[in-house]
Length: 85
Image 1: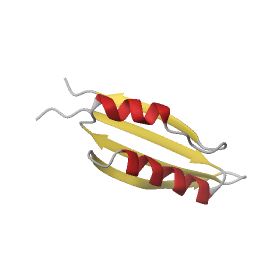
Image 2: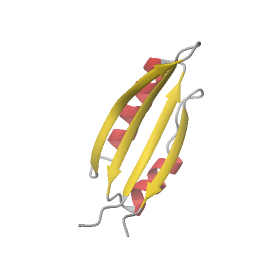
Image 3: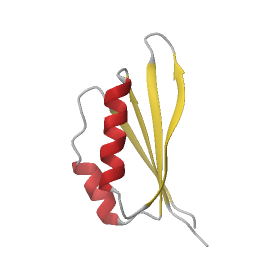
Image 4: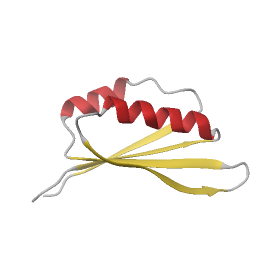
């Protein structure tokens, strides 16, 4: 079965703010199969905290919700969409 995935990578210097942002994203995507948030290794000085959330077969409405979701200043997000053709 072909699956489309949407991967979000979040990073921040503030761990609490990052976890709150992940929680907001998971709540916004309540009807989608989610893997994560996965804690990624902390790197460097100053400490950069990272999380990854993966959505399996996301609806286009989810992508719209994520684009309009307000995240705190200091949380960076990268979105990557993979389609299995």
